[in-house]
Length: 174
Image: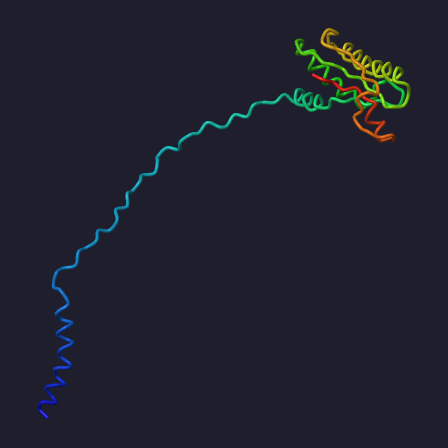
């Protein structure tokens, strides 16, 4: 029995000795804590130059928007400027008066109804009506060129009222 007890004790003690032999008595290296750098807050508030927004002249802004409209439409067989186009033409006149080196071509057009000769004359009357308006608004006649294409350059193809409405026009070309 003594042998049996010795065997049991060996079985218990051997693993403990094995485990004890694997450990070291050397001290574990200490890992330094990361250094956190303290940043002092500025004592003075930094001033930043405000963004300067350029001042826009409302009159010039309106003129620019109006000048973007470069087509004036006319009623059937008429060369009278319709009231809804007066502000647009006034904006063109103001721009041209201030910029005397700028020239503009006024291209008159007509719809397909009427003879080619009649439509050329009608397109010219329309373009001259615009030129007269601009001149009476202070634009120099030397800045203007009048030309008529009659029915030869339609803006809209078709043989109906919608196409004819778009073709009775003067185009302001800078």
